Image 1 (cartoon, rainbow, N blue to C red):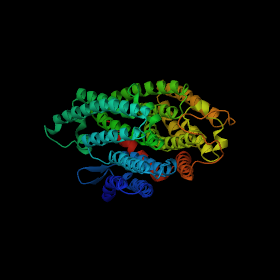
Image 2 (cartoon, helix red, strand yellow):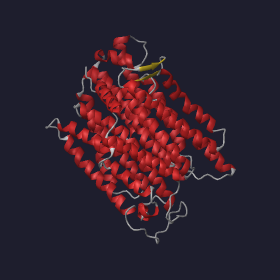
Image 3 (cartoon, rainbow, N blue to C red):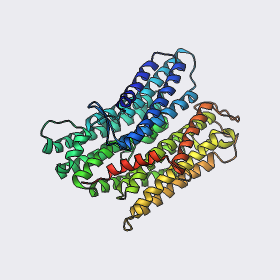
Image 4 (tube, helix red, strand yellow):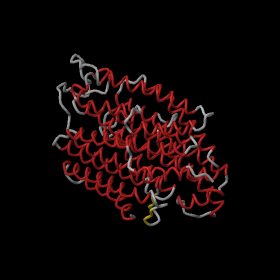
Length: 496
């Protein structure tokens, strides 16, 4: 099993380097292959991680049940995005198109490499480095189209994310300082060592480190009020990059917060960490629910949906019941599949109508006979409708919250999620299910092709894979996956 860790942390990097020197067609093929292999290798880790405390490869690589949950989510969106990108990108055969294709596929694989490495590395310092690398690469990908709007969004992302990661670095240093009370002035900042000694760490120091970690990594996760880069970056980035940002990067940032959560509950007990996450979660959900009711840009709508779901994750972790934590981890997987599928559908719509303005999009289901209905299904999945995975995960979270009758957070959660549902469902009704209007002029980004037919079969395939995964997670998740989720939840919910 240790060899799988080595392959996962090296293969995407090697493919990224190769993509820069080979033809775009070859880069497409090896990217799809790399994403598919990475996902299958992640699935191969599930049985072992659900029954063993950890799997290690040397001193730098380590996975446990929690790592594998996020690894599966990341590699799934890696594989499906590789398929989607091969159909979404329309590259010319001139030198400019070839250069763009090489840069895009090299950047995409590097981005996926950095996100895959994050749950594999052993220690808070290496985790910070991995997430810092994701910032650099993803910022370049956001600006790769070289428009004024994309460049502005990229700079905004770099400035805010760098500030957040600076705070996260301070959290890493302070947590290291907390460990010196037990391990002395020099020790390895590995997860095993930190968890073994956390019960003796100074309580006030751990509280400070945890708050800084939530604020710092919460910037990359998209928690309010440090979410402001997210709508711009998601809207202006190429759609495959938007899918990776929303489906994988936000989850990886949440993973970093959970590692601090693990240490904190062993050191100071669960009350303070849960209260901090509840505050950030409610703020994020309130903001997202309101903004979802007033969006006009199709990709910004999905971006604020991401803020909503990150708030749900944070609120879910504030509940004490183990079933809620299982629901949170299932939500990570379901959100990756749903948001990736939704962005794939948005990409198909944007290519068909040549605009992101929802006021100019009508009759999407008529014009896109396959990806149109699947896009509506993805929106319903994001709205927590059965039989999709997010319905199951949110049901578990709410069930966990209801185990404490005096906790009004569950009521707030249900009310705000319902408000968000109205925003998303209104969008789906107006743009996709209404009759097509041929009098609507396309946007300035291109000429709309208002002829019935799909943009690409690869887009349909990628969306189909995502919806199948969502149905499986919602109706009958595999038993081995449920064992993995329960094992990870047990580790997260284990107090001092």
